[in-house]
Image 1 (cartoon, helix red, strand yellow):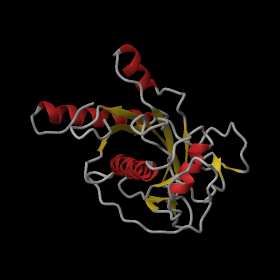
Image 2 (cartoon, rainbow, N blue to C red):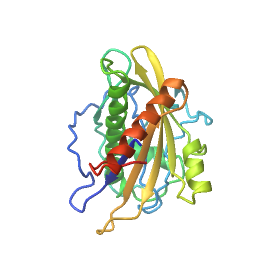
Image 3 (cartoon, rainbow, N blue to C red):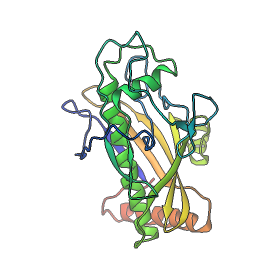
Length: 257
């Protein structure tokens, strides 16, 4: 139910998608929707977001829309950095809730600096590929949310209002999956708050790491679904699960989860 599968091929750090890149390094407020790194596949990388979205640490002014520092430095801040990292930023396809803006991803240099603040001490040679995976996962997550929204409100034009990282808080579904059924716990969790025709709808995104593919490249999958904050969300999830289960049972393809 609401699973998004993502893997990297040996030819490109982004698989199964062609993302349109718009470059803009001027804006410092439209920060990225989710700051992910590849879990343990890169040396010294953390499976959690390199930026603390909880707002528990004070590093200058905090943007309440994403619980991140309002300004992420584009300059080198670590002597360990041994490679040049681009400072250009990519505009996502994810709309914000005002003025037709789109959320903006960090540059590779900003991502590296954010990771340094959380203890990353490597040279930075893997940061660009990590950023590609990060952006690809965000785009895929938003497409899955749009699919949910199309079912719930076909005439709405949803946008992402804000988000927060909750890496230390297992969702009820992730808790049951990892505790009662012996599955792997997600390496990260985010809550995205979507504007549905003026009403705020919360989505839960659990990030899982799968075994590497045949080329040794990392594979991830995302469990994306509306939070059970209302009877409508409960109905929506039950309805979709029923549809997918029936489709699979009838042999017409599809994945039930």
